[in-house]
Image (cartoon, rainbow, N blue to C red; front, side):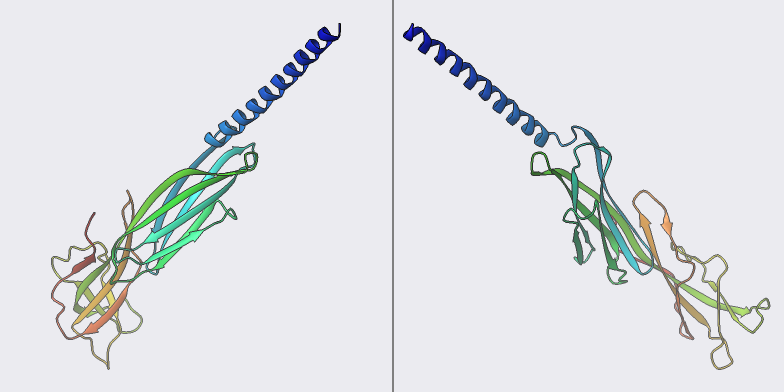
Length: 233
């Protein structure tokens, strides 16, 4: 009887150990699946964007979740790089799901401004940071230089204004449709007005021109229009 009791105790102890091992293994598998599959229980997307105006170029990286049952948190690190190598970087450090970056518009640094973003996810149940992936966007910038020649006094202005029109064959992105009206210089109209208009172009979109640019008046012939823009690549 004593021997049988000992055998029974060993069997019960072995069953107990086996159950604990199973529960422990199942827990490890669960958290491993959660860490390896961060989309489980939620739907997440991530992307970058790039745009600009005549003063600044902007970029962003965003992680979005349509539902987030597991209370995941998001981290985004975005970097904007200019054609000449200027950079701006921002790391949200889990304070926000969108990282914004910007650079000044520099007429000596035209071409494509690239935005690269790295997206992370923090799973509180697994206590682990998970790399989601990366995203990319770009915006192209340039300057249209318009050579305008004097065409006369604009009679529609309340005070005398010198009216200029683009020279023949001015094939640049941002040619003003109505020409350019400028003030007299010491009571006379100078012969030429060279206008510089900064433009931006989002990827897959058209060129965005400002309503007006910066104009320089002179009696020196500017001869032609030209586009200041980096290589198309």
